[in-house]
Amino acid sequence: MTGSDRKQIPRVDLPADARLDTLAVREGLPPSQYGENSEALFLTSSFVHPDAATAAARFANEEEAFVYTRFTNPTTMMMERRLAALEGTESCIATSSGMSAILLLCMGLLKAGDHVVCSQSVFGSTIKLLGGELARFGIETSFVSQTDVAAWRAALRPTTRLLFAETPSNPLTEVCDIALLARVAHEAGALLAVDNCFCSPALQQPVKFGADLIIHSGTKYLDGQGRVIAGAVCGPARIVDDVLVPLMRSTGLTLSPFNAWVVLKGLETLGIRMVAQSDRALALAQWLEGHPAVRRVYHPGLPSHPQHALAMAQQNGRGGSVVSFIVRGEGAETARRNAFHAIDSTRICSITANLGDTKTTITHPASTSHGRLTEAQRLAAGITQGMIRVAVGLDDLEDLKADLARGLDTLTA
Image 1: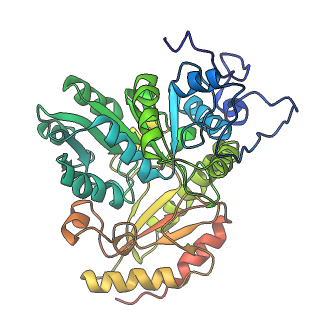
Image 2: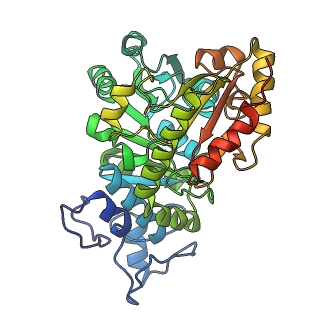
């Protein structure tokens, strides 16, 4: 029985040309018989069936219905449908975290003997997963420069099945050319997966540039207020529905309905938050460029950023809300001391490695988000001891400048 022949769970009746901001507040499931305007939260582990035959048909996937929250739940489906609509993909599967989304994708697409090409600038845990944990199961990964397309092409093997990029990258905000990487992947018979965490679909839709699969840590901008852990994979139905959903049924990398509901509500304000936070981040980056205690600033919105023009083309003219910068100080020990001093002098910024919050966060990537990497791995990714990452929230811009100036103005050589 094909999907079109099965009884289907109904969809919201929206115009086919509904735009992004409308989808962000409307897509999901129709309301229940009670006519609620705000999406319902279904806190239930299982669902009751009218009779044994119907239960059998639903468990056999002959009828689309809610069966067991490990792999089907109305609240989770609403979040999945909404995020898929925003990303412009056929389907989406929600997961318990961003890292579980990457794991689910790799488990579904790869087997022993397969090869992955990945940017060396991705999140530290992604490097550990692809280069460490999966290697124990016979899956090899080559790490290459985020911005060197020739290096990606040179790393290809006959066994390459997946190219994995994160753009902009964490924390250097390096931007890869999605269209070129998609071409490299497809010419090699591989798929391109893009981690869209830093931009979210409010600024960037990778499928428009040829990416096959989109990864999200919903913990970040999709939630937007630092409340829950969540993840997702967006992509074509032939992968998400036919491969990843059955795998989820067996593995249980499941997003709870409550966390799905929180992300669902966060998506409603995603667009306005990303615009406001991106604008504040650019202004802060411009101020940091002029500070004598700062050696270099990384933000795609700055003309000084190496991939500025590409970022503006891919990211709807905005650089996102993450700003990284290197404080002055000769030698790794001095640079680390100065970075710690600047961080510890803040009174407004939250010292935490999370990002995407309405509260501005500040962290030292070399000892937190990328602390599990070797020094060689960190340096290959451009992460030095003097680097600080600020994820700009909705705090007042002048207050943020004053907060950073407390430490930067009092740095010693």
